[in-house]
Length: 239
Image (cartoon, rainbow, N blue to C red; front, side, top):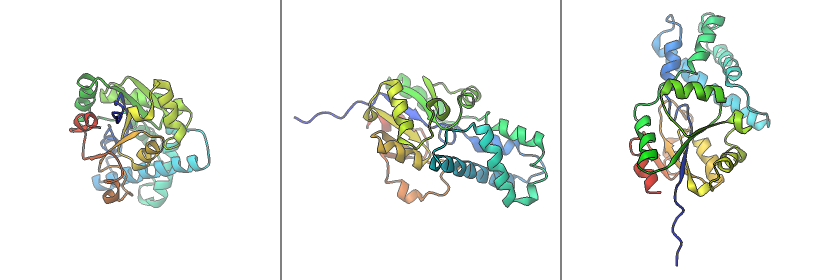
């Protein structure tokens, strides 16, 4: 007799990019003197450099850093490549406003409904499992209006994703096996890390993220590839 597949009991969500539209918030906080197309590209470059900074810390086996320290350093790197905006974006007040914009992000339009259906219709627990600080996650749940059962930050877990220990510590805290949990993320590196410890994986394609990934390859890597979360409850119900 063949055993039935394990029942999915919970969903771990990456937060920024996956659930939240960080780009709109950051672009709106840019000084008005910067043209909209340039502000958009600066935001995208800043986000990309932030990930590169985190990747270096993972390679160096360093502890998670407060995002409010990482972001200014990443911005300086971006401005070194865009000297025409150095003056306006070197003003301490402007930089402080930009950093705060990362703490106030709206949810993508379909996310709230998807999370509610996962909880109410499928009876699943829903958690944030993301790099960053707990303070950041508290601010973002308030600004986005999203509700989760628990927030797991890299600061709280003591390790960055995609290290295996980041996923294992989260699983230990909720007392679930890897095969009982789905990670939903807009970042292939994150899902690859979750796969290695045995979690199920759903990729959410967001135009703001994974700008260096080959989407043709990413489509075939995970349990599902979605262009948004409208169909997420049905997909997870079928896993």
